[in-house]
Amino acid sequence: MINSLRVLWAGVRMQWRLALLSPVDFILASVLQPIFYTLLFLLLFKATGRLDSLALFGIIAPALIGMWSTALNVSGEIISVERSYGSLEILLIAPRHGLELSLFGRIVTVNLISLIAIVEAVMVAYFGFGIVVEIKQPLAFVALNLLAALSISSIALIMASTFVLSRSVRLFQNLLSFPFYLLGGLAVPVGALPQWLQPFSRITPLSWASEGLQQTLTDVPVSITYYLALALLTLVYGLIGRALLVRIQTRVRNEGSIGFSN
Image 1 (tube, rainbow, N blue to C red):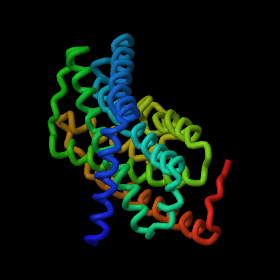
Image 2: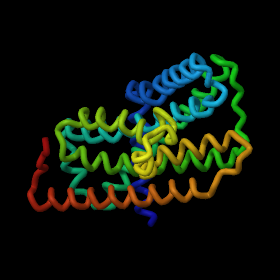
Image 3: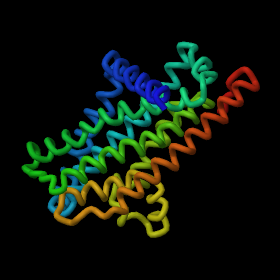
Image 4: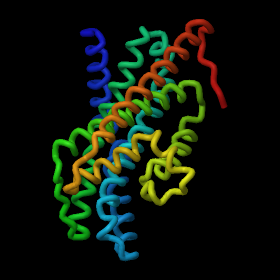
């Protein structure tokens, strides 16, 4: 247990230092992108006369978009950088728990930092549109943000595992952006999606996090369903990511090299 925590903490410290040394990707995904989407959403809602009814959506959705983009970027960049340095193979033959804990620690570090996006969205709403955001349920707000970050990090662990066997990391990153914004109810509310598509949105943490966080800004008590759904998705995706990494490590140990899929 203590050794596992040490490995996890080592991943956290490493990614924190890398973020400070190379902040460009982090700034684009976690700082500038949420500001852009908040302005876009709120301007669109204002132009259509729906600012009052959709303001909360226009504030929460961009913050989650920033978090998802950060997860995509860091999961891909970790693999790309390690591959370019020639250290990917060394990571893959490391003790199994060491690899997954290190990767998860690095991913979750950047995702937790990206929570600053919600602050940016609130500031844009206030200074740009005069919208005062009051967090009516602060404990629920903090808890759901943390659960969202952990759940998205678990999915990023799956993506990092997939990127190991792919040469086209950038292609997968692009493919996993806007479809998930739509499926997760970030481009439009889940209720506006076609009826047949709505059940699929529930397998993403984005839809649960978006709806739950919006409720924390109202007087409506947040249902325990949101907490349970995010916790369950974190567990499920974490186990899938771990299983993929174990499979990849076994393959590398048996074959002595990494095979790539196109």
